Image (tube, rainbow, N blue to C red; front, top):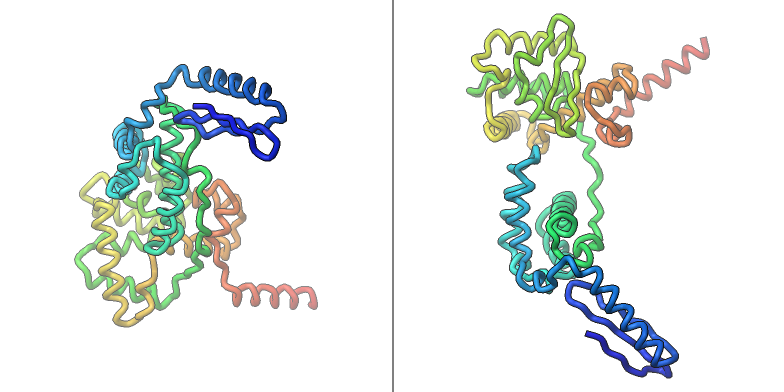
Length: 341
């Protein structure tokens, strides 16, 4: 629909079309305004030939989410967690809105509400998923959205990265708690996380066929980044893996589900908290941070540590590195003494 009106000695023309942002322009002459309206409508007609604008009135956000979780999510490595997140999206009132009524402000309000409930990192991941859903709908499903309604929603500022290091007394308490538990695989899992810097999922996917203990190597065919890697093993890691290889009853070296491992880890921390109360805030992923920091403390270079951890971006690798200032002081003093000598 087009309209024209005189305002402040100028002719203001506007063209509105379902599925497109309104277009407005001012002219001195009425004839120029009418000419611009005809040209704009022709342009919109050309770009909309392949689409049915009424689709936006018939399709809800929930329809897009269901199609995405059915057609796209199963092909992803983290499909289970993504499917659960979309299941939660479907419970919100905005999921019932048609695409003709969806606006960036809808997701701005959602962002503000979620920030009162969860951490900023969770909200950033939710907005990222929603943006991807709308982008796939626009580019691959012939949904005539003029723009992505999540693209211009400002992301909240992420919290500062964790710098949690594992103390020696905490490790002792954890291993003691493991011995009091009924899960024989938890202790080697914790030790391997510290020795190798592997993620929990990578640890649980280890198989006998991936081992080359004679040469001190472990192949990781399935990674978070979908880029396989082979990591060198410390002597301690070789001993742990050899014990798992000898006692294992399954092709997997740690034959347990991710949820069972998580629950065992939480129970272990609760037992350890009887002697170290502050250990309850330790996350299993912090052991990966601990491992990377130890690699650097051993004197390994950035490329060498990256080859073990699998980081492709040095900036991300440094986020996992938390060197102890007191250790750096010792190195500086030793270097100064050597120069003085």
